[in-house]
Image (tube, rainbow, N blue to C red; front, top):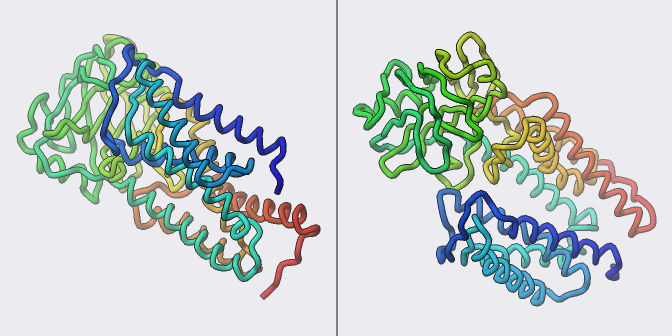
Length: 409
């Protein structure tokens, strides 16, 4: 295709998205210093993946307007370096060498995808077959990896319990905890003498419970804590706390251990009827990844992660409303099956997609601590496959003159 107005608008849109994401100040009052590490922080792996994904559309757009691969990569590198230097003067931003490296990688990948478009965009049936198999296996692998990464993972360490913690990253909750327990083990504030037993309770196949009894304080504006458990290095193992009217529970997962983000289990409005000075009894129970909560006399069940929660280990937006997180989950599970639908060519391929999606949406909750896949997510997976097939038919009609008839085997 010759470069046209649409390609130029794609460049403008991708560039605007990069600048909006990278140059907006965050909550901190002071700019950060230059960070020389390549993979940095507790969620360094997530940052690497997000930096690659952020610049991938820009690299694709630059190739689409006719720039050679080398200039696309160089342009991405120079833009990223300029942004990182600008972040030295933007409050709350953390410029680093790693961002430049992985932004550049993203530009190169985007440019390479467009350069290889004749192979994957309009493949012959012979070429489409291996692409279809790879896309189907990749979608299944992501589903099973999601279940594996969202399983609890607590290191063997000495643990410390913090009541109403006043630490970085949490708003100080001004209530008063009277007592706390994990299962039948009391957890007083301070070093936990029987850390091994606490770890065993939290990883028990029979499930666990976390209880706190407290006097409620004023409502928090951001995430706070009734009870937090940290290991000896200061990493969070467990958090039970308020976020405005919401009750939030986090238990360290493999995702966090691998440098990815840590989603939470959240009950919207659970603390709405609790006033300062009220007695507050909170219990969280887990049974193989299925959580339930009790706040005084009110209960909530059926909580936990699903196969569609994979997006949350890359970037979990705590402040977003539940309906938006639901949309993200539906979009994620649909997007997983778009490539398989796009490269499907035969009736047998359609049956393979159906079997593979069923093996993922049914199988992952059966072998990992995820909740059963809701019906809406099943529908989203099916729509993803159909959307991929629809895009392929449109492209065939646009560039080959008419939609080819599928070969039925």
